[in-house]
Length: 495
Image (cartoon, rainbow, N blue to C red):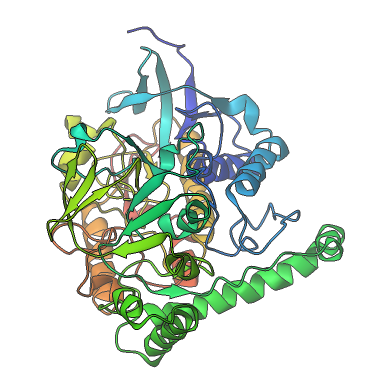
């Protein structure tokens, strides 16, 4: 295995999406310049580079889906599309000079901690090695496509692909198309595919709560005002943030706010779907917020088109001509699209992460990933997670969570970089106490109620979502508390 060089970086960031680029920008603002961003792709963007399906957009208002120190002042609409969001990230690279720090085409296979040297070695698929004091894992929660293992999948004679690997070379005009899945991704591309396909069948495992998106396109005058006077943008941004924060109460079980959410979703369904049979199929039978709450103005109308069918019978197998459902019906298709989400519990991707004494992160976690503040894991010194376990949201912008994490991690990296004898390893007792509290709070949440969702592992433990508001998380992460960590003091003795 070859070595790239013997230089020891202050930090290496894994991933150049929202999380990784935001961490790089935070480093630059804190005067930390000796870092790399290693990205396996050939461009920045993360999920906004990968997900290019028709209609791809963010279901969080764009004014809060950006960093407070780098406002998206050229925003064109309230819910921005994929190209606009990737453009924002490219602008971020330019604004903070991140280009010199990014190495593309770096498929990381393993990272390992050397306790004697107090360093991480990062290995890539081409045999290169990088040495660093700290590793910042910013590979996200939604980057590995989840493709169910259906019997007979290999026998299908048509075209099949995952929504995150959209076949832009394939014209769907006049095709018989199946969408396996009807959640966050499908509600965006189904209306677009329905316009051109001869027939579109949407296979739904369970109904979703869908609220109106109420898209708003900013006028040229409004856009100019944002850029000339950013305070007007900040004021609207703050109003949206406060509104979304108040919406957290809707995710709590048996609250008036939750009932209000159900009623808003019901009204939206009844306004857009007149067929009583279809309404029944589209009505959830679980607590509001147990699954991701969706926003769409055109999904329901798409399902009422003559060329679109909603099927709720379970898929049992693929056949050469299509799919067979539990009622014995064979549905014939030319194209099958997986809208089956991502391996959201694979917080470390496919790489091997070896901490103190060679313990693997997968061994430490098993099927229940956990971290202090979603950031630090015991037995893994100087390893910091961005968008780690229990830091996802269902009520507000996750970018606000990322920004809080970036500031906290920058404090840790600065502390470590100031003295080569230092390392930070979170105390196991601190991790356990923090996560016990998070799980206790989550029991009051719809996230823990009876439904199947990507928030939970097979034992029903919520491992993706945060248990409180953004403001509560900001309070927790405002200052690095050294007493939470096992340290190597400057004298050389462990504390």
